[in-house]
Image (tube, protein in one colour):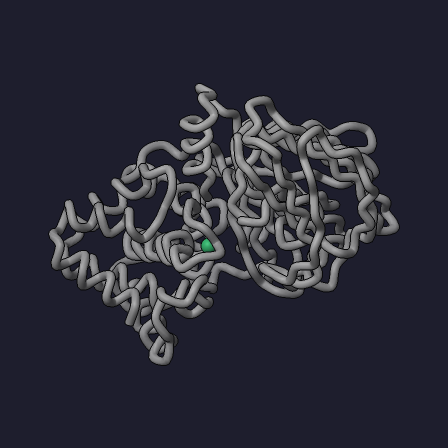
Length: 407
Ligand SMILES: [Zn+2]
């Protein structure tokens, strides 16, 4: 997701050959009683006039000195989550030198606005962007590198995070030199670790049928997609955690899925296979803004690729069942585009079906060329997709698909 335009702009107007992406230095203390104390320094190297961050209102923020030439205002915000504060920094002139912004804050780790996932549970912690526990770029697409030191973690918590992860006696050091919009983390008791091609997998019971299916199909889906798109940039760390509400999400080289029922060999493999194939597909499909119409290029594209995997792994009949279920579920779905971020049914049902229909119209070979060309793009927008579609299958096909997205 997405800062590439801004990088390019910074390079041009700042006269700065290679502006570094934003970098976060995080020092945090997790109190087992559920309190977070944090100090976050954000280094901005781009010559922007203004930059805004969101942080949950549950944290009390201590005033810190602003760098020379920088002013800041705070206002309440309710998007994309309720109960946020929006910190807007304005820079007197486009800064040629990096600017460091400091946040010091403390408050409860848990929030009532947790997307159905309590950050602190009896098994340990699961934290990600929705918890708004660190200053998140207000565009929800500011990608950054990070050095984080977190202490207050009991020795029996197994930490799953991105990048280099080093456990300390009472905490963890995370050094991530690749970009992501999030600082996601699972620290839970009893997680066991397994490795396969494309995936490093964590679960409380690796012998459970569902865990074995997740590993098997992560590996097989990684190989299937790699044959199309080239090598997975990084092995995916995948944690399977127990939750009241089933959901999954993917970040760069990191995925969290729900433990659910252990399952048994009498169960169908299609469900777990489709689920992890969708998450693995996000390695190539995560570069559109989550706040805009274009988000179908994240979720609908990953879901379409998982349907392709279902066909390859389980046969045409299983794919036909999946398509029929999606047609049934989307009879009342509104247009995918034209109203901001699409809803769930549009993202996971209608969008993938439009891609299936497109494949039928232009043929699989052209569809593959289209998806491969798109996967190479550093930023995913509908305009870029339609440009590739025009080049590959002609203006009529592109116009028709654009109309279908808006119908
Ligand atoms: Zn997804």
